[in-house]
Figure 1 (cartoon, one colour):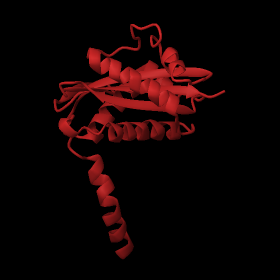
Figure 2 (figure 1 turned 45 degrees about the horizontal axis):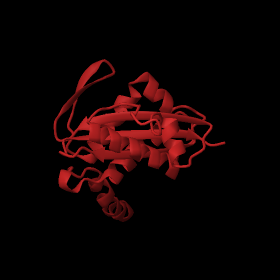
Figure 3 (figure 1 turned 90 degrees about the vertical axis):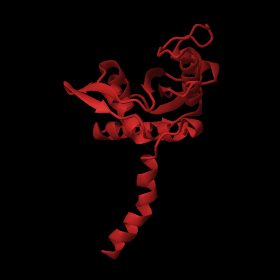
Figure 4 (figure 1 turned 30 degrees about the vertical axis):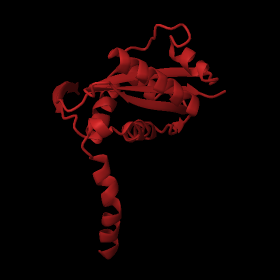
Length: 182
């Protein structure tokens, strides 16, 4: 019993930290990206796939694209510049060389409840904590056949995930770039 109590006390900061209310004046993009990647990797493990390894080239490409989407306040896979038009262009711009590249994008409003269909039922998601936003984005990807295909694509072994907040703080954009190394 004493061991369980000590373990609970040790785990308490981790548990409560992931349920931290979002403060747009002190938004923690890294925490949200970490939570989202954990959900993606949990799903891969359930499917008996390897966890994705964080890759700097892919992360730079993801960051570039999340910044672009946040500035435009528009979710897209393509940019207007020929140097960064596609996910592959963005990865190569930062020096990355990969056999395969894939990309998932998403957005979520902050602090506003969002309705989303999950298993043919409408579910209301609060968007006031990092964990709830990570769950919303992950479930959106999981219930989208093309996004889910990227999550469980066996050859992918590396990834970079980036979250960016719009200037007015009302919405975040997420970009997850996947890669297969040579």
